[in-house]
Length: 343
Image (cartoon, rainbow, N blue to C red; front, side):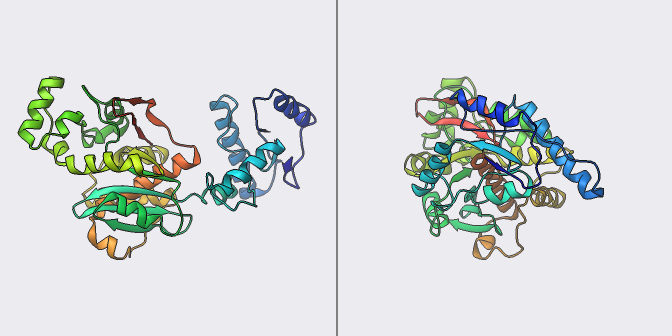
């Protein structure tokens, strides 16, 4: 068991915790907690954090995204599995050190060991924003495989989130696109409907539109067909990526961040107001983009960099186990790829 030196356990905590572990269905058991009165403003903030954690546990039906260091009982075998997984690089961190995933600032110190990248297509290829726990790092390449290799040069990536469709429908619309439009709120029109695979294989737009009408009964937008090269490039690469790759949509990400901050996302991403709002939303999530991103910053548009950073935010949420998929579970078409937009 781990616990803080200043924790006072409920008399029944250990007995109930051991009973849960005895069922064989749990690897570790923690609890919710309260704070003593006093402590001024800092004490109030601490008690608010405790209340937020308890609310999250209730919302998840007794489960928790993290088990806190206030008091948690672990199975010894669970800690041994964590050490083994780190040694095999299935989990980040040193193979001989175990750091519990804690709440509040300590939680983020632990989970920010994840190395993730968000990717957006740009006029000159691909722009990536890598999050490692320090300042965000930008990278650029003309091919997505080269971008991933560059980002993983110093250390492997845990998750890559790409703003490009993954999993192509054989007929009809992808449920991911429909749900993403709903989640985007006022910015719903920024979510394009992904053409079916046969249409994307067409050599020109007229043929693609004709194929789409034949298969689905509707045509496709020129904007969605313009992404054909990038979509098919990712479709080829993802099967040999060697890293977990998920699809993200930046406007859905920003809409989620705005909702977490208590307001809607209204201004267009290419407007000055829209760029400022999106940069501020990222900063509130701990992603403070530096003014100088080096050569990659000169090769991509400002909105592309912001979009890549938003995708990186989703990649980090996926690595932490905080993200949700649209739909849940993902669809699977004949290509065998899980089709969902993550946020």
